[in-house]
Length: 338
Image 1 (tube, one colour):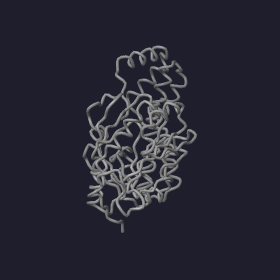
Image 2: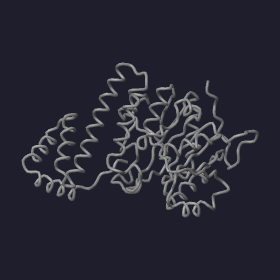
Image 3: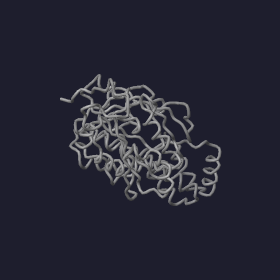
Image 4: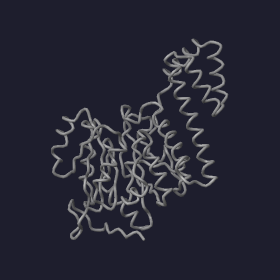
């Protein structure tokens, strides 16, 4: 039976008297983050709840000198770890293995919590001691056409959080908005370091499959920065990561027949989306033969009248199809996944 959380009187940056370890370990992976990590660190140090430790992991940044100069004012209040560049999952795993808290709070280096983030997340968990994880909403900022909206307005969560609801994105988790039991992460096997993109989605599915209980609250407690130069902004990267994850989960997890069917449907959809993204990118470069192959694959997985028209155009007038695609790109604002 999970132990109840006593977070009612932690209001300083000192551990509770008698507690050998902090209640919360805050883990911040940093890759080329010198320009924005101070905001993330400042938002943690401004928390109204204070029984935490901060673990900052430099994931092989090329701006190491600048990064270490920026974090120098904070160095006495954080645990600073370094590793060769191995991706955000590996960086977070290093933090988890070094953590002492019962709870782990993830924060990306370009995001920032509101001052009552930890207090409100712990309050929510205290109201249901059976929970292993909670996530909240966030205001979107930066390079996105959704500026001013919240994450849950763009990527909704509805109903109970189950393996199936996360699989089909009926419940969508923002990693910087999570607070999760450390032992539950360990039981699920931590982040898969072979997956560079969508590695968090992969872990939440395994947390649920291993018996973890997840819920969410609709309070907006985070400022989420969307950046066009982030690791996850590479076209198709998140889709490719999800394909890799779903194939692995299909091989390794003991799923019911209905859940395995749902996973297969989801995999087919993501593979179609990825082929479409790749085909469009190839079309814009003028590689019409390769674009035709990718778009044919997308059509086979998910046939639509629009895709069929593009394929016909590529067969009959490939150069005109390229010109049309480039014209459409100039006329259509780029939409980025929040």
